[in-house]
Image (cartoon, rainbow, N blue to C red):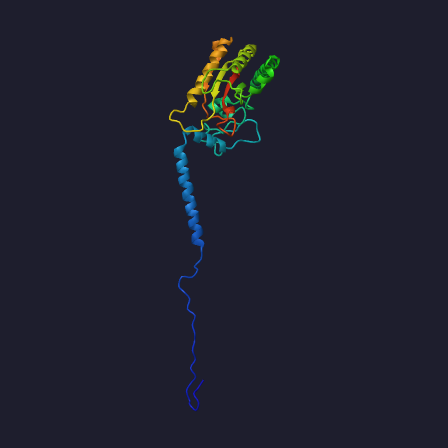
Length: 283
């Protein structure tokens, strides 16, 4: 705007917006950097795994990823290009049937049948389990026929496992197997061990005796759980021998202390128990 009565040109004011010099220049470099860091992490992880595993373990991993020929029961192999050569599979493809590395099988392959367990082994296992089940039924019948069978039944459990027939004798309130904090047996344990020894004569399986105790409520300088579990297991071993069990059948005597509780409350007296195991004869 000009002044009144003057001839002065108008003054024009421009406002220029100035931006900073550190604006966005693209993020492609971040993606590339992330890929680089990931690759380096994978590389160092691979180096660590190679250093932490044995040659046999590395061979097993390589064999796992080694391709086989799916169109034939017999494994492939060859000496030409793409013929299946591998530094980890004896210059041939991994065994998938009757060929390939069957000429020089690994220890793992030699120990594993075509389906994991042979028919002969499966039949033998079934026969052993059948024999142990008969012993289990005979033991329960003997307890029921006993004059105090109903009460004794409350302190015993049996189960057939992969190891054999486990006969578990355990404490209940007012019905302990041993006198307090000792390996001196009560009349209840004497009767139960006598029944177990007599029924065990039905088979010739080796026998294992394992002792377990409950945890103590306070920290002790000399915690007796180890020695007590071992003393009790050994006491039952001697009782079995005295009741007619052949000494040569006793395979092992073990004290487990309070390391294998059967209840959430590790101090419960239910954890005081003796396990007499008729081991499978085919092991």
